[in-house]
Image (cartoon, rainbow, N blue to C red):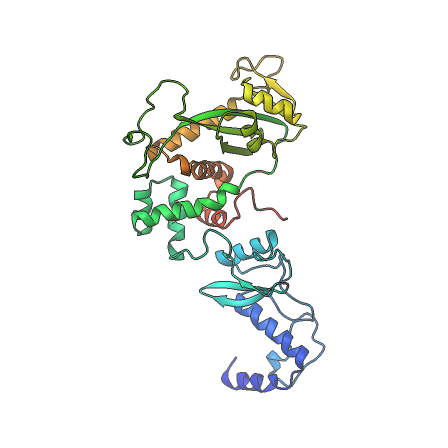
Length: 360
């Protein structure tokens, strides 16, 4: 629009009534946020420039969880979060665009009247240097150590550590809502570690992960329960102790009673299955299915254990306090598969992981 047409357009604004001004403001907000707008049926026109006479959207046209965002990453995150969680302050779906700030679209909730951006309420909120987040995502894809991630992102070692766990925090909640069909469940054990702790250690520190002081299972080994169905959906959890109650806390909410649980016959897992009313199969030779029941085995979950431990070897020990984050890291790698892109990991860090990208 040239300067003469623009002045004509501005002069015409004074002739709009209150309703028309409100519609114009909404259209300007949509344009500022890069969201679709436009007129479908212009009933009232004013003496504006010919190419701008129909500038107001139809009454009732407003932003909702299903609107199409502009094709940049922040707008896609905002679009997906509006569809899945609504307002981060009150869960309302009555959301309107509210311009932009800091390169991110902003929204305003008509219910609580608070404003927010796509990252409000996520672990990425307030995290600096968003232009380097793609490098951090690539470090997660590659499974890089803190030192390599810091070099890739051009940040300090301690900053790289914080970034890693900020990116992984939301993914600890990204788990399947249910496991069905044949479900394999088995525990594995990971050596307890106080890595990063400088004082108050209950024992002498080990070097680069080290080895347990005792052979076999002991209090130094932390039990981790993993369950997978035949579709590849995986859930895991660190157990405070290997008993039925701890297993129920991890598996109880997700294993359907119609599922068939395959296990190695451990006392705790059998007790959980009986209490939960889930049919289960005790496999005397867990990795060797019987000819009459070739589908009953736990080879898939044991293979997952192997991949998990081999992948974790590069870190030379993982602090037990941070173990849930590393479990979610590996779980996300497997869930994304060929779809493991930088954008997918940033969306996962914003609470839109592969298992969470569903509507409420």
